[in-house]
Picture 1 (cartoon, helix red, strand yellow):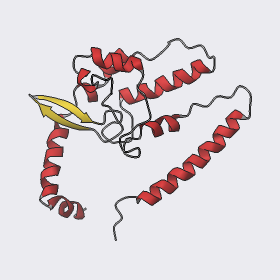
Picture 2 (cartoon, one colour; picture 1 turned 30 degrees about the vertical axis):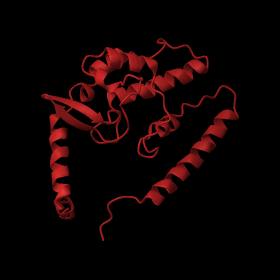
Picture 3 (cartoon, one colour; picture 1 turned 45 degrees about the vertical axis):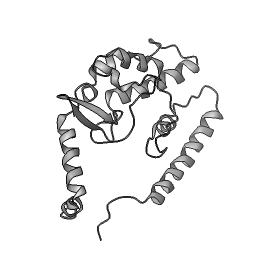
Picture 4 (tube, one colour; picture 1 turned 90 degrees about the horizontal axis):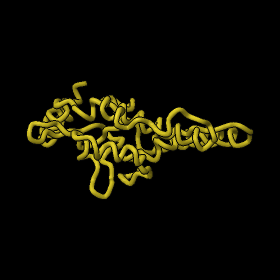
Length: 185
């Protein structure tokens, strides 16, 4: 017997324990003066695309939305109504007219664990907001979204191989070959 992944029930149990632990921390912070909580877990929970079935509870910072609209290679990630097409799923790309474009993901790197530069910017934005709300003076009002987007090579120039790999895996899966290959490992 080779176990591949956690079950949904196991994942929910782990999440429940983490939520209990976070509640203890939140209570400890609220019970003392001059204590502030930077709740990255809550921010990530509001971004959890799969867990929320696509209905994320996070509004992207206006500065990020405007920077995406200004960016010539990334403006396609903002729809006319302001919806930002970045999420926490594994990055997927497609090649259109010789240009590889992001069609899913973008907040986490290729390993699915570490944030991209833009994902780190989202966290930094949240930290700055909490610091400002607590009355802490910061050098900057917000992160420099233009600079962050310019530095995020995974968004600007995603690996073409991702698009090719997705096409190959889809081909193998539709023919029932993917599970046979995975069983070899």
